[in-house]
Length: 100
Image (cartoon, rainbow, N blue to C red; front, side, top):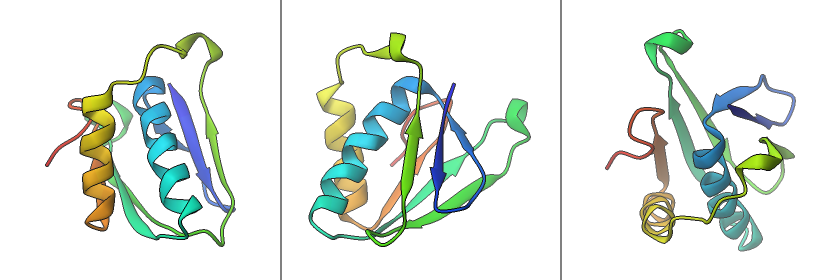
């Protein structure tokens, strides 16, 4: 499991593979100075609950994942994530990776 840190906030634990895809989407959106909501839904094993972050170019963001997870990016998953972020709300879960 990797994690995302946004600004001075706490670590948000996300599956390594999914985190790599989220990182690509964030990089593209931030390069274009676009903002969006990133919502992470946690499994009961992780204490359930949700984290929601307003992603904007003005705050530093750190993505940390294991180097051994450099597998090929899933273009279908990337397209789904990009479409969600383009509509302003990217919502991910550990079980499914992505939901509507």
